[in-house]
Image 1: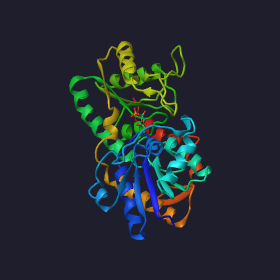
Image 2 (image 1 turned 60 degrees about the horizontal axis):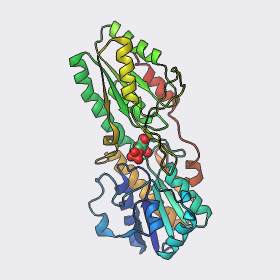
Image 3 (image 1 turned 45 degrees about the vertical axis):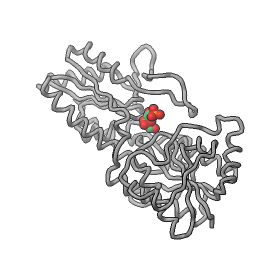
Image 4 (image 1 turned 90 degrees about the vertical axis):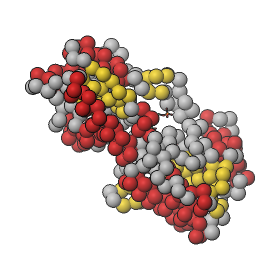
Length: 347
Ligand code: F6P
């Protein structure tokens, strides 16, 4: 049994991270296992930045958004000798096992560390819900609730002004947030990265709706949705094309491009709202608090059972353990059946 366990949170933050940290600490405490927080994801492992994590440090953090451990998109594999340095630093800190909380990027590094001999377990998180191997990640339910509330609010002003309102939500590779919030908010069209869309089709949908007497429309678009029918096919709209250490560009702006096209091609007054990081901030929903807590307790159990190289995952209503490798390599695309449901209400 390890005497000291490290925990870190990596990648974009999301509501529920603190609930998961608290759960790991509280489950390991009665086993007389000390937990130590590694700050700013893999950056803290490279730079040996840590904080103690006892009962006092995790008191009151359950409903708090963000992560008390901070986070970063640092990728040790992109630093000279970064993997070896991480292994050495963990040893130097007396960390005998590690709980890595993150999405595909963070868990990908965790998987590499496991291959290098580190005793690591994973906890899946991301508002995008695009991680393979688990039916759901915490953070997603909160993001959907926030986006749905925003769409509800946008609805009333859209109706007052007879406008088309474009709502841009997060979702780098997948349309989970767009589809769920769009269905919940009664969107008239939803555009997702999985299905490059044609402007012609969006214009047709909006016009059809207005022709049947509705004077306003709500179009939800995921930031990673792509135009399929313009000169540069499958073109992504980016804010900044420079890549981070995991090879991601900064997305954002497709809503503006789309709104302009809709207005030009229909003549209907159109506005855009970009929800951005509002979807990632603030207190988690009860669902996410419970899911994060279940994942945390389960991952601590994996440490106690010596099941390293594995992570907690939601399968149906149950928490299961799956190899870390299953979560990485490919994203979990939006379930086609969900999108079929959404399409019933288009136009
Ligand atoms: O990883 C989830 C996510 O919220 C994506 O949907 C989004 O593209 C990205 O993070 C934004 O990351 P950052 O906060 O680093 O700009």
